Image 1 (cartoon, helix red, strand yellow):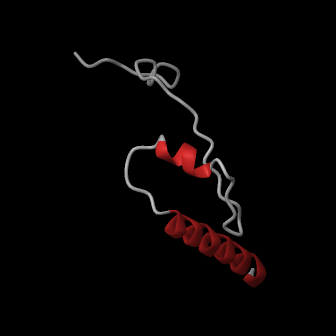
Image 2: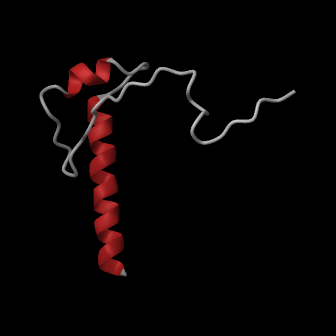
Length: 67
């Protein structure tokens, strides 16, 4: 028998933690960014993350100008 999940009970069995990892639209980061990023599993390259954010912001601006 399959257990039915609803929106409210789907993640009751997991422990969640909010980690404030924010990169500004121009690629700026806070001093505590590296500390919080260490709490996330996996390998992270801050330079690549910053490039991704700035390219995404540029794409959104370009799309807005062309519309």
